[in-house]
Length: 74
Image (tube, rainbow, N blue to C red; front, side, top):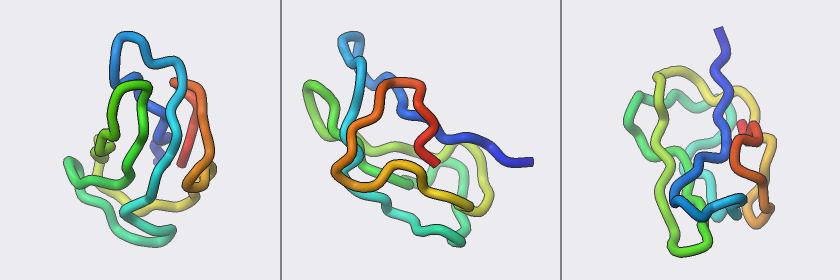
């Protein structure tokens, strides 16, 4: 079963974030708790952890792109 990765709300004032980089690529295995991406918020750069283990199947938001909180990014 696929799990959607969404742009998280990393601060109380965050409404969107910029994806800085992916730490994993399509087809790579991901362990729960592993850092998979870096996101720029309105206040700081934050690391995004995987909530489940699996394989990264698709990346929908490329580095440098903005996405509203809750948007599916992978």
